[in-house]
Amino acid sequence: MNNSTSQIIFLKPAFIRKLWGSQKLATNFNFDLPKNTPIGEAWLVSAHPNGMSYVLNGKYQGLSLADLFQQYPNLFGNIDSTGHIINKEYPLLTKILDANDSLSVQIHPDDEFAKKNYQFLGKTECWYILDCLPKAKIILGHNAKTKEQFKQWIEKGQWNKLLKYVPIKKDQFIYVPSLKIHGLLAHTIVFELQQSSDITYRLYDYDRKDEFGNLRKLHLQEASEIVLIPDKNSSEASAHDNYLVDNSFFKLIKIVNIGKKQYSYPNTRWLQISVLDGNGIIDDNNIKKGDSFILTNGYNVFSLVGEMLLMIAYC
Image (tube, rainbow, N blue to C red):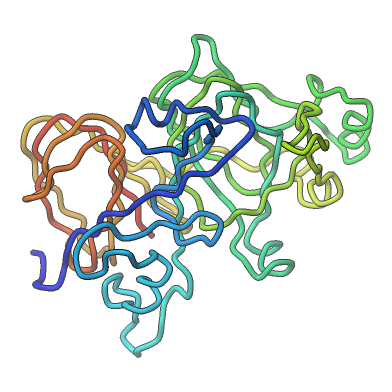
């Protein structure tokens, strides 16, 4: 059962301007977006400096998630039996992405490369498709058999030869490991869970210019250095039951709640939850589409009332 110090901590998301964004997240999730600004990402639960979440309620109101995690490790069960900190940085980041236009074709480093070169985590991520066009696709993987073929197709701009296109549909789950070439295409909205990292290497960006009229920077050298050839990194997550992902990076659970149900996740240090559709009650708290919150250490049994789609993540 929940201990006396466990609580629900609601979070204010960060909204990230992207040239491929729009104002759809205001309409779809009732977010208070900056007006007349193309917002591509809502960082729902984030302790990353490029898009920080802040506490909305209770005694910690106004504190950043990064400061909360650092200053109150007991809230996250972040101290082991010897008194040592387990995670130095908050390890997870959840977003909603509005790809009103196509994202760049990109690749992320793994932990080994990122820690060696940046002292940061790598970026394994996953997507849950919230909305897309009929017969929509994403870019996931490549067709090159050798490094020479990979470089040749890039130099000649033969992207249709190089890139793999995968059909998608609403409510589909897609796992995107680090070192995997990928890209969302236009008119796609996804929920994303990832490692807390913001390192992206662009291979191709449709020759788009930034707000200053300059072509956006590509990272062909870095991308070529880390890409796996042939394309052998699996996009299958080790899922079981209602877990979409259950591996060393993170756990992701999809819940479709109808009526009143109780849920229990023993042996978890903390839980982070996002409401992606519907509204209802968690214990004594009203929750609605677009809300994200943390259940602190010890709060691993709870009741939900209402019709809702939620994503629960932990590591």
